[in-house]
Image (tube, rainbow, N blue to C red; front, side, top):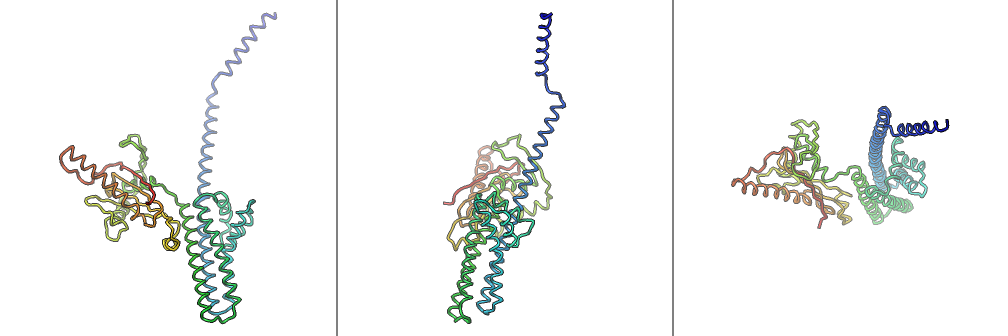
Length: 390
């Protein structure tokens, strides 16, 4: 009998191995796919929510800068009035208006500690007249993005602004301690000092606002070129690709009315071809070059001129012809004091002109006749250019 058990045991092992190697039931595969699908959907929702939170936080900081700026300007105005009147109410108003930037300072310092105090930061933001619904996201965004270039530039301007507030408080104290009425020379000197601090504050306010704005609106040259081509083509969005005539490029369509396209393209045509356009100097004979200039600023033109800095990027996106363009070019020139039409516009114009010149020469070689200047094609050639200003 023992011998008779061996074959049975062997058969049992074979049966077990066969079960282990059997494919998973269809129902189990479906369950796995459903779980994976739910994970992907959850990740997409989380990313979308995170992006919306970041945008909301940046918008809250833009509003905070507005409150800061108004508080500082109102304080400077109140101090100027006190200088004229000697009225204690004006001096108290001066101190009261500075409560807004001082509240924001409290928030910044609380978040810059080795162990950030989020509760104290939220209280500071509230004292800076920010809404209760935004202070939590402002604190979270500060901690998460304080080392990111665009945001760190804004924080740097904020820190310099707080030092300027200290100077304003010191100036106010000196004016308040001076015997009234002040002699005309002393009064004129104090008034000049108020104006100087006010101008410096405007520079820093611009720097903060524009740095935050550039962080909130980030775009690449290929994105600009692609969108310009889509609008001029009536809503046809072509997937960027390297090979000319690539048949597998993905094409999407979004609804645009003919009236909207006509108005937009006419405006872009006017930028280059109508007197007063910012790129009128770029117009080309027999080519309906259209375009839009732009300048990515770190501060206002006046502020940049006063500081003697070149911290701007000149943009230009152009296409031809006006409808259903066959070439679109986006260019950016970094570190320039010129606006986009002056700095980047000539780059776009020269590329478009070279394209048409080469096309005309090629057609002449083939047919012996001059080609029409602007044939219509469904898929525009898209080019992007970036470079340092010499």
